[in-house]
Image 1 (cartoon, helix red, strand yellow):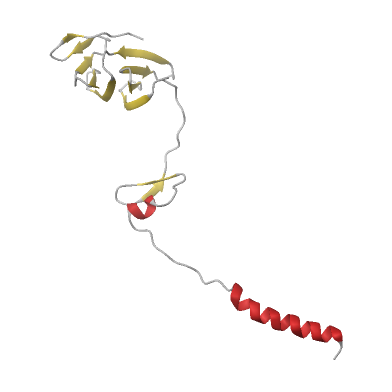
Image 2 (tube, rainbow, N blue to C red):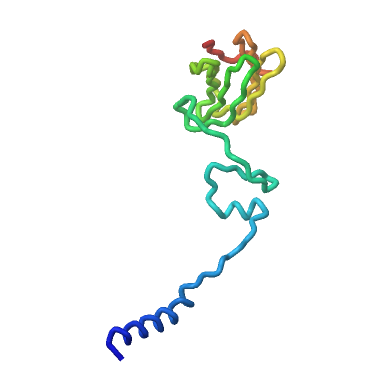
Length: 154
């Protein structure tokens, strides 16, 4: 047998022996719960508490408060955003044109909750003393059951 034919037969035998080793079978799994998805790294998706996978909202930086924490954000009827922060207990207002101003500087450590009523009053829950501030639409701040607080109009 010519030398070329021997190498061809050896090559084909070797290829037939190696081919089964390279075969891959697919792996199928199902992720049905939030904890299933929690093990992965989500990218541009959100997983709801019911385990539903939805597209994540597009995040864009609106402003930099310079504060260590942002605890809460609320929007009023005029399109102003109010941002409650810590560790200095400040509330910033971002108007509908994107301008940031310091709206309220409390003596508390943090503003942890914000709400707006139908009249446009802003309510701010603070810590550590649990004081609730009502800031009127005119910018007048009232500390509930404790007299008046400081308000900076922007």
